[in-house]
Length: 126
Image 1 (cartoon, rainbow, N blue to C red):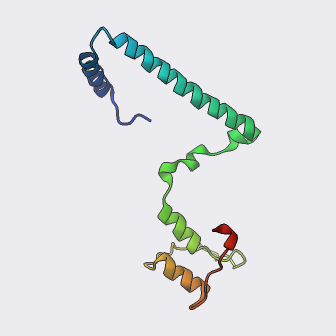
Image 2: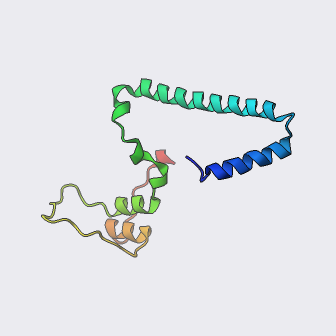
Image 3: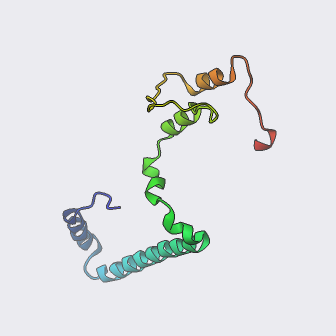
């Protein structure tokens, strides 16, 4: 993650830090920053090693890009879950056109359950 920082911006931040901190305290702060960076890197590597140890050989087979939270779209996930077809239904021969609906999630659920049908309630889940 670069946070949009280019070399020019980092240089400007460094120059401002020199003026604000002062040249006599700058080496101490630079050493603290280096220790912090090193400890963060060690924590990240430790977490990765622990995951690799717990997952075993499956760790290298996981598509980590697919799990990127920036690709998470809750609207798409909910729409796909609500419009999910019955798995026992026959599959059409050609590619299906995406279905769009202006209905709310409540309306879709009512259509699926039938009018006046109360959805199942799990007492242990609450």
